Length: 158
Image 1 (cartoon, rainbow, N blue to C red):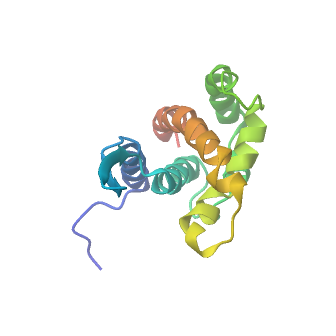
Image 2: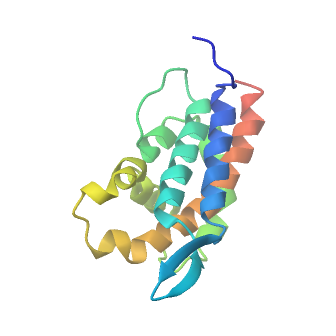
């Protein structure tokens, strides 16, 4: 089958990252109590952002690497790449209110793509729709651009 668009994984990762950023723009009209408010599409942002991150990791891994678990994908990266990612984000992550280490944030995000893409079918409590949504969005905001930049750097050498 021939496609009318390019299916390069790097371009697709960039598309999902762009979709994440559009979801976060706060331009989406919401009709509530007779008023129109503008807000971000947070759940689609988390799904698109986590999938972009997954694809960026997979680009730096052997072809046909499977799975959605971000921590496992990260753990399979070379030591050099892992150190570079961690060094680039640690300072920014320490400014977040949750006071976690990089590995803890990555573990929290581990299965977020799978958990959130069908969140309407699950019976999640406050942990997902409360403080967690803010944590995920803030961590993704720090992590994705760094991983994208590092992916482009190492893509040339892979």
